[in-house]
Image 1 (cartoon, rainbow, N blue to C red):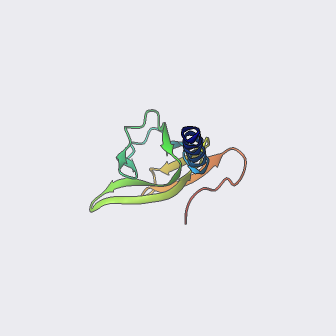
Image 2 (tube, helix red, strand yellow):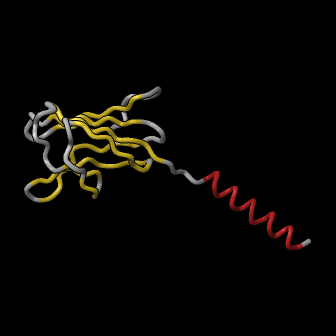
Image 3 (cartoon, one colour):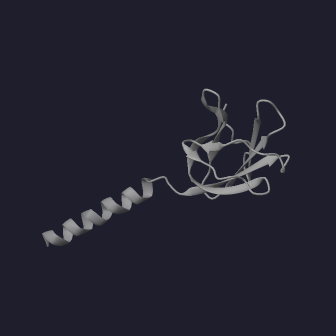
Length: 118
């Protein structure tokens, strides 16, 4: 009888933990304008992004706030901060014509199209 109660309690705790656990992943699409411009070395937080082919790449990222950065003279320079939403695509457009490069962001899907922070 006690073993059954212990097992039921353990299952209840696991079910509760699974309900409160925020997680998942979303997608980040990075575009460079113009598409034939050579993009500088880009990073999402500390992770370096491989060279963009045809000016576009799509990455799977964990849900939450992140920063798009590039290599600068004194280290990494933050272009923009953005939010990755679960099962959504956040689009970041990097204008390589501007000095310094500029970042615009948005999200496809329903709801608030602006996901930039600050």
